[in-house]
Length: 391
Ligand SMILES: Cc1cc2nc3c(=O)[nH]c(=O)nc-3n(C[C@H](O)[C@H](O)[C@H](O)COP(=O)(O)OP(=O)(O)OC[C@H]3O[C@@H](n4cnc5c(N)ncnc54)[C@H](O)[C@@H]3O)c2cc1C
Image (tube, rainbow, N blue to C red; front, top):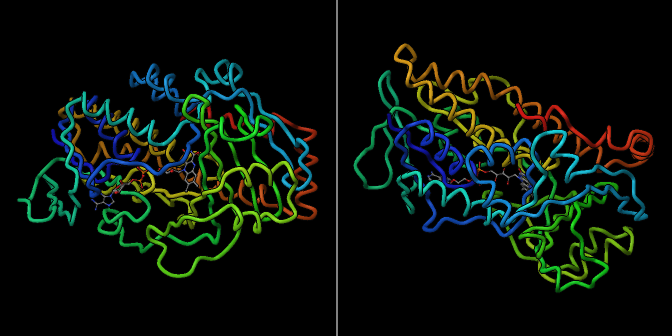
């Protein structure tokens, strides 16, 4: 049985690995001339780390990731701590795996290495131009290459997914009017007082900033979210900017936060887009075509689980494809099981990410209520057992 995968991001590589472990022959098409990931960090909850461990990647992850001991939630305006969540050993005991923070390129390289070892055929510089499907097969076309047939096509082609448009035709994702400034800095290059091995989230009205270590703790990743519109075409909208621009957006925040921003000269700016939470299984798979990761459920990054859900999707897809050993099951039934098992959890995570944004950026009475609840409930408010415990 042959599977074709469109997209070689974290989701596409995870899907290729899972499908190949399920005994399928896999061909992956990536439109870029080289495999790459943006220079930024990524947080991985224990629900995700557990899956990576299950794929034999624990040692590789230990080499490149950082494993913060706590999440410290602080007021962006006054600097004081609002609440804390223990990570480290607490997460291991509670959920059977640690909470990790990693450079995207390191995670991508880890998956790519595993995919290569599994014998997946990787086609760089190959844009999937269209597909057709009938009762027996799915056929894809890429450039002037002859058409290729397979039993399954997986659209892991990201936020602007062409496969999604061919399958659902529901138009582009929506702009959120939230902007993300991102930066990475070597810990050794910032003053001692600003270095940190914890996850810190600074919450303020209409903004928040998250920082955490990556690359075994040697680098610090920062992402600052502010409200603001971006003119023009949002597809791949991404530009370099300077700390001064971000500092104006963060005016009124505390000195401690501003000092960190000031210590990093170069930033990149993204416009954030998402879609409404999934409405049903038909948005995840139809016939022989499945969607996975951002192609299926792009979300706001306020629960830090977009890539995590792509990896969970991949694991579930692997379980579904493994059923091909049962002669009584056809491919559309297997993909339908994948879709049924995934869409509600993904919708819940999308919904919760939107709500987190509202809570993080709250002002007035809502902000007062948030701060009081965090003081009274602390960890009980910050932990997310239904998510970290896995699907
Ligand atoms: C500011 C920010 C912070 C985030 N933080 C976190 C976090 O802490 N934790 C977390 O889990 N998630 C986080 N996310 C979300 C995460 O980045 C995404 O959910 C994840 O990277 C999506 O992966 P993907 O493989 O589905 O898509 P992508 O990474 O977009 O990959 C899609 C790939 O498909 C290729 N492609 C597109 N069209 C075609 C075609 N026609 N043919 C062939 N190839 C094609 C593209 O070139 C690309 O390589 C964050 C997102 C943002 C914006």
